[in-house]
Every structure is written in C-alpha cells, then in structure tokens.
Image 1 (cartoon, rainbow, N blue to C red):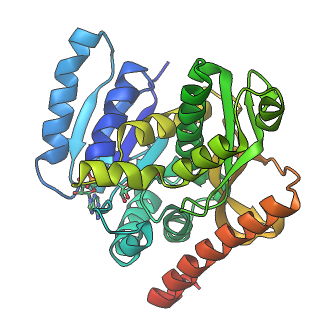
Image 2: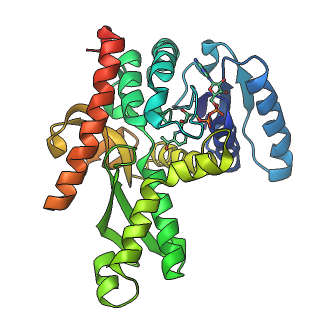
Length: 320
Ligand code: A3D
C-alpha cells in the first residue's frame, strides 16, 4: 500500500512539531515547505535522523518550491506570522492574508485533491480566504482551533477535578478569539455534565467561570510567557488528530472551523462547530441546540469573525 503524503506549508514552530508527530504516528511521508531557504531542509534532515531512534518509517523532505507538495493527501498550513505579546490575532490579518493567497495558489496547482487544515491566524478569516484562493470544495478545507481550545478547557477541568484528562470531554464553539464559547452544559467528566458536578458539590460556579475565562485567554497566556511567539505543541497535536481522522476514516466528532451554509444561522463563513471528519473531509455539521445565553455569546463571536472576513474582502475585492 502506498504511503500517504502529508505536506506542511510553513516549517516554523508548529510545522516542525507537526512533522515529528506525523512521523511518530506513521501517518505518511512528510514534505516540509517554507519560503525560508534551508529551514525546511534542515528540519526535515534533523527529523529523518530521529526516525531510527524512534523507529518510524516516514520519508522527511524539505522544499522551497510548491512542486514538492504534488498530490499530497493532507496539507496543513501554518505559513505566516504568529503573535507577539500585546498583539491580538486580528493584528496578523494584513500580512497573513497575502500569505494565504500564495499558499492557496500552490495548493490549487499541485494538490487539488487534498484535505486542507489551516492553522494560520486570525484562524476563521484565514481559512475562509485560503478556501477562496485554492478553490477546493468547502468540505475539504477546514480550520483548526476548536480541538485546541477544547483541549485547553479539558486540561484545566482535569486539573480542577483531579481526574484523568481522558475522562473529560469539553465543547468549545464559535470563532477562535477571546469571545469563543466554551460550553459548560455540553462538557462532562465521564459523561456527567458540568452543571451536575456543581450540584454534586464537586466544584463551584465561580471556579467554572474562572476556567472558562482562562480557556478563552489560553493562547494569550502562552504568548505572554514565551514572549517570542505563540503556542505550538498543543496546536500541532490538535491538527494531527484532525488529519488522522481523515486519513484513517475515523469519523471523529471534532470542533473545527467549518464552512457554514445556513447552519447555526451563519452563511458563507467559517466558524467553530462540531463536525464529523471522515474520508470525504467534513461529512456532517452537527447542529446542537443553544440556549439563550449561548446563542448570544455565539452571535457575538460570529460578529467578530464577520468583521475580519469583511476586512479580507476590502483588502482583496476578488474574494467578495
Ligand atoms: P512560526 O514559527 O513563525 O512559523 C511560521 C513559518 O511560516 C515560518 O517558518 C515562515 O518562514 C513561514 N512563512 C511565512 N510566510 C510564508 C509563505 N508565504 N509561504 C510559506 N511559508 C511562509 O509560527 P508558528 O508555527 O508558531 O505559528 C504559525 C501560525 O499559526 C501563526 O499565524 C499563528 O498565529 C498560528 N497559530 C494558530 C493557532 C490556532 O489555534 C488557530 C495556535 C497557535 C498558532
């Protein structure tokens, strides 16, 4: 059986971690692409030299030419610039929009059958622009944010309850900004919804409120600690779980930035919602019922995404 091919556009902090995880999990051969000469070549050689130690068989190659991504099965895009302290994700829009245009053109030319996962910020607007510029079907182009945001929520909850992270499920909806919507009602410990855990006296509303707040600011917390860039281990793990669900047709139900055509009252925008990812990409958008407060928070989050999408249309009228 031929090995899958995974192309990573952007060989920076997340790109390198993605390559290592893809290798360790033997998801396929990996091509690292970057505009920086030497960076993808150096990282891929370093990773290839880890393979005998870790015991994985995956060819690692680095490239500065888009022809190297030809016929990739999965493409994960991290090209662009990350945040520095004091910057919001939205501050990255102008620079990263141009990057999405060139990345989209490369994908269109060399890998039109791929499943594409965008990580570049501001996420919901960049995945929208990437889909427009590459022209691939909307079910084959998604954004990674919800898996990461819910992983942060799960970790904080597991710490609070002093239980295994494996037994905590968490749901985060909306755009990948500080007004994302971590859903307390749909998050559980071993199937027990969080509101029931308050009733059982295992936690308090105040503690949960603080965890929700910390989840919303989870990216900024790391930016402030690192000072030179943003999170990369957990974002890479999150995108790899999405790629794995596609390549192995696992049909996992994951929160991703998906293209909506009326679901949740949203049209032609990418927003974080639960979807089923299988061999055809996004196979189903799961539409859960939101209560009044959640609806209000979701609408606010969608409005923030819309502002950014409108800004993209102003900068590049071809997208309008
Ligand atoms: P970094 O380590 O700077 O890597 C980015 C790489 O992109 C660099 O190696 C650049 O040389 C390369 N690059 C720049 N322009 C181009 C181009 N036109 N074509 C190809 N490569 C290019 O950043 P990082 O890996 O830490 O982060 C990458 C992106 O992910 C940033 O936009 C972050 O804001 C974003 N990010 C998103 C999340 C989400 O949850 C959505 C989390 C963390 C980071």
